[in-house]
Length: 69
Image 1 (tube, rainbow, N blue to C red):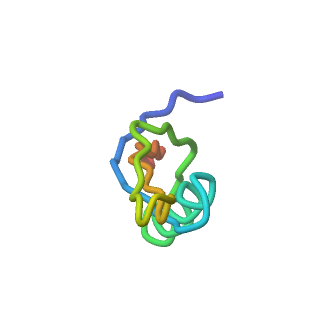
Image 2: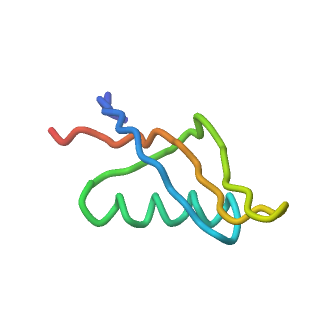
């Protein structure tokens, strides 16, 4: 196994459905332009409340991607 070097990038995913969907949407979109994404970590979860109910979820997260040799 060789040594790897990683970079971090901060992104925000959002969804009207769930936190899970906000994370998946962000990772899918980021993977369209960033190669070698290997992990993520959530930094903050927040949402919007409208008329006393949750209307939107937002997740601020970091993605780790391997730097190519």
